Amino acid sequence: MIPILLLVTATFRPAAPTVGDLIAIDFKQPVVLDKSPQYEIVSQRGSRVIIRTFEPKPFPISGRTGNVAFRNMIVPVRSVLKPRDNLAPAPLKPPVAEPYPRLPFVLIAIAGAIAVALWITAIVLQRRAIVAAMPKPALPPAEQFRAAVAAARNWMQLADALREYLAVTTLTTTEVLSRTDSLTIAEILRQGDLEKFSPWGARPGNLGQLKRKALELIPPEREEVAA
Image 1: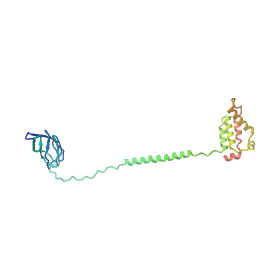
Image 2: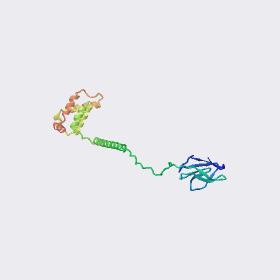
Image 3: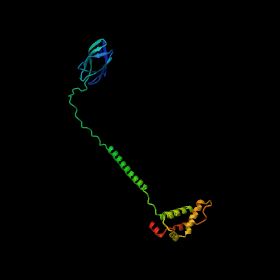
Image 4: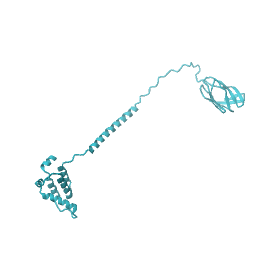
């Protein structure tokens, strides 16, 4: 509290300001401070003014509050320097060396390894897809016929295999008759038709024996080429 001839009173904060502090002074009534080279008026609004100074000593303020003019209101300001300070600058301290950051490089290395692994995986998968998409070489007719005969489980399948083989080969009637009895071909085809179209199915017969006879249709020279 700062009394001025018991007519003007004001409070200020902080209680013990130092050089450069913003000092808020509250009056009872609206106030207007006089300008002075000893302090800087930061703001004044209504009954509050905010000032500061950069001189380490008390200084007076003056102005008008309400209808009363005041002068030499002392605002105490203390210095932040120690007593008998020679004002010599403090010695410079070298910067503290920080440890070399290794974590970013470790993370970069891990990310690079993952990228390389993904790249290699993509190449392998692409090559596998290309190989899988490539058309596989067709088996020779003799090999296809041999596999179809081995897989046949009934007369109809055996007859279909025989028809397909006879259709894709250039066997002449003489070649067929030289390898097996023509009755064998007729029997296989007849049994296949009966099993496929007859409500009573095929007649009793030895499927395994006719499968072996059907393979005799493959000429020896063609079998050697297929091998």
